[in-house]
Length: 464
Image (cartoon, rainbow, N blue to C red; front, side):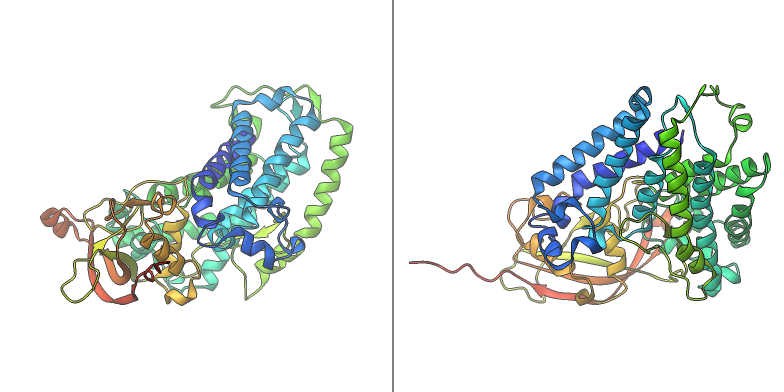
């Protein structure tokens, strides 16, 4: 279950890279990889793209990852010798590591390192005809523990609203990417929101300790984590964070628990001795590398979603240490007017999922990840100069660059590129039930200020 679940998540991750990496990070991307690898040494960010980068090679890597992921989901490597099956997982991990380590801010999310850490553990699980070694089972649980307990601690040490149980008064409205049910979750009674926060604290601060308890207590802990992660899955778009946590939580179940809903076949063979020795050595390595993440959990200056070495083998996790109370959105506009002025008509670009058109219901994309949409949420917290990808994005829109426009839902200039583009900052909030009945809108917005002044491309020089 764990291997096939991780294989499915790997498949989603490689599909995202295939569809989004080139316009974001390719040769003509917003943050080109060739520039990055010239500035950052291999030892600091190991990646095969340090040897050579091209958009074609990126596509080869992504397609290879997709094919291997599909093979894992179908169970094909389970019929192979253990070393060959382990090699499949090693290749998946190495290919995705190569992508993440050159992905810069577009790959700075906690679920990237989570997939890499879980994917590296999966190398040593062995094929289905072998019995998983007990150390690997507990290393999986140790990962889930750090994931959940780290998120719980960062909340208690962070925003006061987690301690006074009011964070969910705001969270569903201000989270990075609301989904179709977020409007309804936001309008749940405040008393229920406070119960939700209490349940979150129990799931993240108490339940993780029970993962190491004897059965059936550990199975009940795994079930509690699956239920709470499913609740989060229903209420927002968090890429594959919730899905991969659910997959890893199955490490808490034993055959007796799973046997209630699945037909369990017990493998007759132990992992080959050579592979078993490798597992023991790897377990020791993980214990050594766990020192800094464990120390981070105890620190009053706890880091959230951090790696302590470039291979991302053992990491620190956390989410929503602070909750924004008001939602600001950057709206990009363009005009065809060659002399933009007060009377010019400005048309808005629409992104695939981030709020824009107030009448559009927030869509469901998770576990797929829209990287540009997520970065636009962060953009509203600071000036354009803070985000080195933002001005290049405006330039690509002025060029009507098709790969970039495919990252968006609607191009208001399908025939001719705009003469100028700019960005405005709006305050968004969910409409009340009465407002929605009257207008049909999910959002109400108020203009705050100009976010980025209008820019245009310099005129092309004539020759001869």
